[in-house]
Length: 164
Image (cartoon, rainbow, N blue to C red; front, side, top):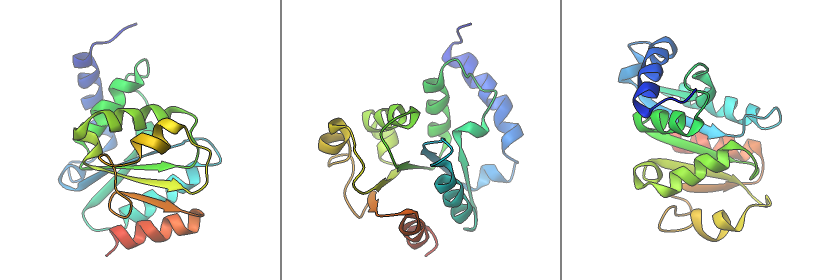
């Protein structure tokens, strides 16, 4: 069954009110993207815990919107990214849905202007990102793209940036 973007928006709003409280709407909203596989998801969960310890911040994952338009995940990503104040992308490998999301982020200034990217050093990554999407004019090292050696360093960088 196909859905229009307008129908997706209506479904999304219905689920949105179930995921977020009225108080969350007033908070700074950070959308955390990355791999949801069993090995990588713990990094995202720890990142969420750190961010949510910050005053007036609510961070979340796309998968918290379970019912919303699972037939077209690109529409779903677009809707969530639009209402977010900031997007965090954690890249620990270059396989899976987060690569599609990274492509969307790079394609639209509306998204890459509010995105910070955290990349595990020395991962085998597509040349499209390594030689293009993760460089200027999209991202600048130390400003909105950060490289880390291990998960402990990732969490340290997140704390340094967000828990000032």
